Length: 296
Image (cartoon, rainbow, N blue to C red; front, side):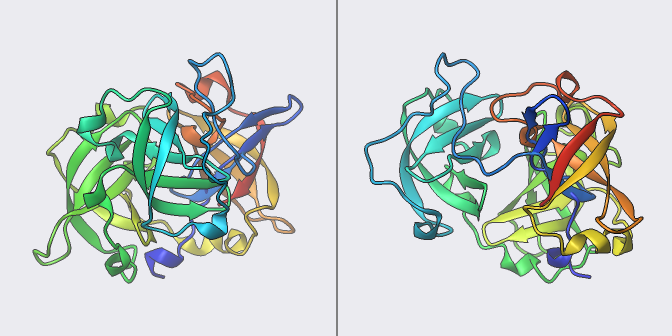
């Protein structure tokens, strides 16, 4: 099965059962889940007001947006290793630190910036402030999960790394992919900075391909048969899961497919557990805890 058809079980938004606390779990290496509903905005943990900065531009709808488009906007929040940019759309554009130009190191809330859209989803937008990162990754879509590629670590943060991926047989580089903490080794790592350094050579395989976004993994591929029961589930269907393991940057959640005895582990990234900044998953989740999640 090609990488573009493999669906990891990932949690995007979780609702803490019995407590009414919204969480926002991220994509994982197994099943991709979330605890979040569709996001309309975000806030800065350092701001007194939870309202994002809004501009005077006409409101955009998701139908108005196109991948690769350049938009002018304002920095709505600065949170850890990412920022949110308001372009007048239903959701803020999330830009991770690896996609922020070095010329923009001293960003402040309310600052005018330009972003290129790299992912458009019903509950989130992602972008880059570095135009050279806006390349078409469709050449990777036919690569299977057992195809390993040479890559060079470009930037490293606590939760992820950006790696420059080279095409097989000495092909061209210049393709920048996202490597999440959960995809470095089985069970993930507490901090990518503990295990990777800039300039290090690594072997990766394609995990997910979008037109302007590429996700890769350093983990050995798993048998996809256990994920078949989750493959066709709509992204708005909620499931009850149990937290199996908690790390600083992600959690592993065990879920059972509806009407089936099949269960699987899914990765819930830290940035999908709640709106705003969260420094440690241990602050909101613990092993054995029940959460409400949906498959991404």
